[in-house]
Image 1 (cartoon, rainbow over the protein chains, first blue to last red):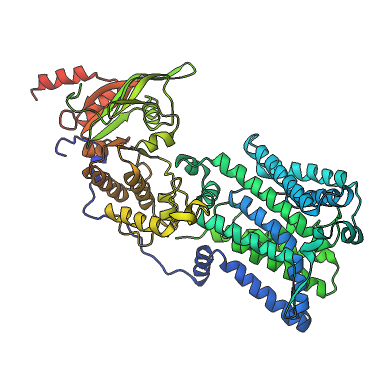
Image 2: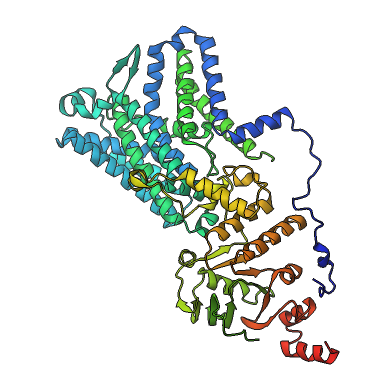
Length: 355
Length: 269
């Protein structure tokens, strides 16, 4: 080092210290500690909201709310948009959003209904075709986002309208009622059958939803694909630099979302007891709300899939609790809308956590 | 200017040419690095330094010229190919995913699966194995202040994050590690730590290409210094043969390497 000549930079040599300089630290306030806690335990905030929701409605309604029959009703309502929330969660983890999950499910549903009831195709085959339609819709979303470089918001806003029109076209705006289903394709509404376990009524659709949550959890937590989904959402450039083929990961995410929506279409038939192009109008909003309340960040790369399940249950309880108060349905939508805004604001606050 | 030809360079480039439209970013550039040495690369902005580095790491495909790895001609279609041949790059924009933990980041893009059916059919990751090895790599380089291998990278300081990047390169680079401005975003003491880390990696026998704007850092660590100017190698100097101001003079074109030699002779050194 003897021949270093001149220049103010030369005096860089540190004197033995090997760690970054430490500032004097003041203790964190309670609020800041709470913020750090929520940042560290992603599911924490959703569990707190769930506890508050249950507590509040139990106080207001008492027995009627806690009654096993009522709880079963909530779970039955959750099974449809809860399934959509899985698809939504995976897309949101990549820092995207899918506004078309609801209509993809409806399109799959009317395809299943028309094929099974009107053309006499075996129900299981009709269901597979419906799920295939979901996959195709997801593929189109993916191609728009990756191939045409549209923002996910715009791409799926467009397909939301387009798929919605296809729902009306395929169904000819007609509802296939419960009697037709009963007579020609009872397996279509199998997802809504009742299985009674100790006062609780469980539907196959609910079990399918929980199974899909389990699969999604495994895929996200225990496979390389899952890690790549998070990496693409957290920092796409970094993901590309370490050799992840980000386009492939994104495309697979949109297709998987489409498949899950297709399965949700089957669950919807059980949930509503009919194949109606008008059903499930709130499902889109509810699925996004479930994901965001569940602590999955809209900015991508952060959150756990189990949060979406807790979020879906919260939305179900809020809707149910308000329904029991005999308020008009519009106030349910108002409440869910308010909930999503609070959740996004909370997400912003939690992400600003200081080390 | 030429190196002793008895040793085969680990990585060598001959006459690289790269055109961007009418701009000649590389104009017959040569490069070589020998086993176990640190080669510093300096050059003014726009000298074609980063294009050279991108060509060596596979991010850019040269229009002409050849790249030799251990004396064998190679062609990289992309960075993944270069990496699979043992050339690791530490990028200036720290390629780490902030919300993911250290272990996940170390193995990102090259995850290891469990043995048997769990791995082949269910694609299950060997998390405990990767965590243990990640901890070992971090310990080997003395990045001990990181207590928890499952800690999200965003909770680390800038220097520690750079440490994760360096550890990743050192763990997987079998031939050469290329470091692009590893201290550019760091404070004085954090830089010191990363420099120690780089020296450590070299002492384990891995040759390093070090690109930096910071002359003292280059002169402290490099065995030889490649001065890049106008799309080609203007000179190779060593910290012993030349001073920083001479290197800067060659880099900016104020003097040629011969001018410097003559001046040194005249001064009697």
